[in-house]
Image (cartoon, rainbow, N blue to C red; front, top):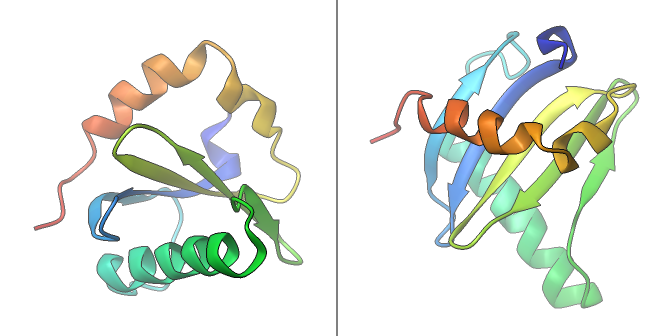
Length: 107
């Protein structure tokens, strides 16, 4: 996986709180991680409640935002628009999730 294609990772719990956050590139211009997590949580809930569907990803001109759920949390990957997100469905996420758990905790 080319880390140059990943700009940030946000791990969000089921209440919408940011548990872990890391930027590989300064994509957010130092916005509070809890604000970023709250925004993604609100988008995910809006899509679920309004459309009855789970938000899996959305794209801007330059970025792709990918939502990956697990038991009690979900992880948001902020990646380059050309990023091949199939890699997140391969065996690598098991090892990659281990790396996510090593990211700085947000208190």
